[in-house]
Image 1 (cartoon, rainbow, N blue to C red):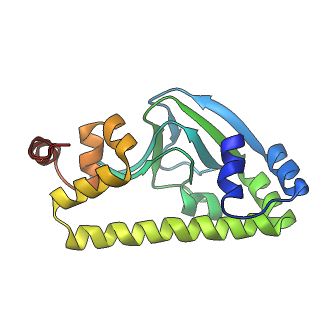
Image 2: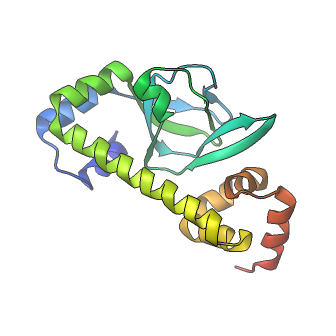
Length: 189
């Protein structure tokens, strides 16, 4: 719970009432590696904060798994469209490693929204951060070579680069695993 509080406090000031309400709504859970948290076709019922570990988000497109999210520690994740609109998701979310998560159910999320202006501010800030990352990722696909995308990924996420499979990293970066293997052989760290 402390990692979530630290994350929030780095972005805004919390009152004692905010903290008490959050502690009431947030449920810490330990989840083993390779556990599906969400499957396509099911409705996302939780917002998650990843305290420890790695989670991947992906879609199955014509039988091919396309990794769209590699979630590092100390970040929020959910299938946002499904969570907000309470409709079936197109996404899968799965733990890559053993994970410590804090989950907030949709009714508790709504309670936080209704009873804390700080929570609304946090949701806006996190949403804007994630949107900026998505826009940057799209731009990277347009202007960077595969090698440049990999080097940027390693620079920004060294822990993920060391602890996620080549297949998953390659999919996330929009290349075939063989191409990524060749790039990794060329790069000396």
